[in-house]
Every structure is written in C-alpha cells, then in structure tokens.
Image (cartoon, rainbow, N blue to C red; front, top):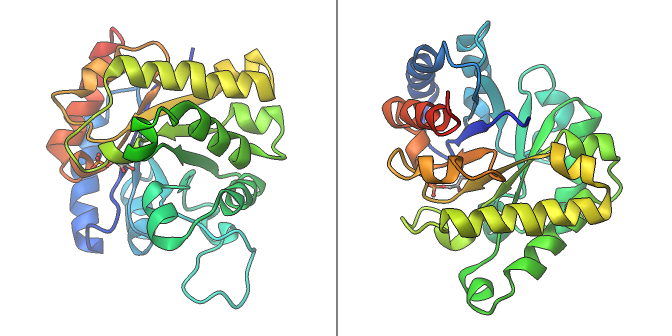
Amino acid sequence: MRKPILAGNWKMYKTIAEAETLVAAIRSGVEFIDAVETVVCPPFVALPAVAAALAGSPVGVGAQDVYFEKEGAFTGEVAAPMLQGLVSYCIIGHSERRALFGESDDWVNRKAKALLAHGITPILCVGESLAQNQAGETDTFVRSQVQAALAGLSPAQVAGLVIAYEPIWAIGTGLTATAADANRIIGLTIRGAIARLYDETTAQAVRIQYGGSTKPDNIAGFMAMPEIDGALVGGASLTAASFVTMVQETLRARGG
Ligand code: 13P
C-alpha cells in the first residue's frame, strides 16, 4: 500500500517569520493524521526555522531545488550536502524551473542522483504544456521526461521516489486535469513507463502525485483515484486552513 503524500510547494512566498507562523498552524492541524504524509517545501532561507518548528512532528520538510555539484564556485546555488539533515525531500524539475531557469532533463537526472547520494528523496516533477496536450503529445513527452530523469538509477532508488505529474497548463490557472485523465496518465503513462524501464514491483512502489490547481473543494476527486498517491499543492498550501483541509479530505477519500 502506497501512503498518500500531500506536499506544499510554497514557491517564492513567505518570509521566515511568516513561514514559522504558517507551519505552526499546519503542525497542529495535521498532528493526529498518520495515514497521510504531509510535507512543506518553503524557500531555502526558511528551511532551518521550519525544520526547528516541526521537530518531533510527523510533518516532513522539503527544499524546492538543489544543485548537483557537491560544492564549488556556483554563486547562488545550494548543494545536497548542505540540505542533508535539514530536509527529507527536495523538489526537482518543476516546470517553473525548467521554463524560467533552463533546467534540462540532464540536470534533473544529475540532481536526482545528488539527492539520493545524500539520503534525500527527490520529488520529481513532470508534465506537458498546453500545446503538447492539445497536439496529443502528452504520453510521449511525459514518458520521455520520466526516462531521462531516472537514467542510471537503481530499482530500489526509483521505488523510493516521489513523482509529481503537473500539467503545466493546470499550474496556477484554476484549470485542472480531470481526475480520470490524471489517473490514466499517472497509471498508464508514468507507472507504465517505470514498469517497462524497471519492473512491475518498482512501478507499483513509487508514489505519484497530481499537481495543478488542487484546492480543498477538488482534492477529494483526485485522491479517490487508485493511481494518484497525493498532491503537490501550490497556492492552496499557503494558508494553513486550506492545506489542512486538503490533508483531511485526502484522509476521507481514502476511507480514513
Ligand atoms: P498550484 O497548486 O498553485 O496550481 O501550483 C501547483 C504547483 O506548481 C505545485 O508545484
């Protein structure tokens, strides 16, 4: 059984003080929920404060990016050894980083390897553009992103990953994939690709989230789907009330 994982990607929102306030409210809101894993991904500078505020709680902490070199003259970058001990997760390959900061499939793959070498679980983002979706290229494109990101990883490493299927046209737009379409792409396209590249056991182990305009009032439909193992939440993770409601809705959709 794959445990659903709801992760809040705060993007470039929240000062350190705001992050502490938000995370304290999330912590108390999800305190007694064991059947859904909850993770917050604040900006780098808030990570130490957030990790301290969550010490002893089941809420996980994730970073939003990492650079793949161990150290060096890479102004502005943060390396995996610097995140080790501070976070258990790290988002890689988010479409905003791919589109705005030139993150390539090769970089995503190197970032995955750097994280895994330091005991941090990648949350690997994949997803097609509106044009690709309308041209019927979703399956081919998403499969190619998955294959490139996983190159050289062992079955055990892949089994422990979190993948987020985030159609770009659904991010921050209020549009979502239908739950049935998301379920199909996650199950057939992504899990199917992993089964072909690795094996069925590995494919069945990896947790795959949906992301893109998930909210308290639409999350249940996604979470009721058998292939969807949680969500990567942007805007709706920035207030404790909506994020906690989404964790509760996930629990309910799973019969908890
Ligand atoms: P929204 O939930 O704001 O659409 O963002 C989704 C996302 O990009 C999460 O990584």
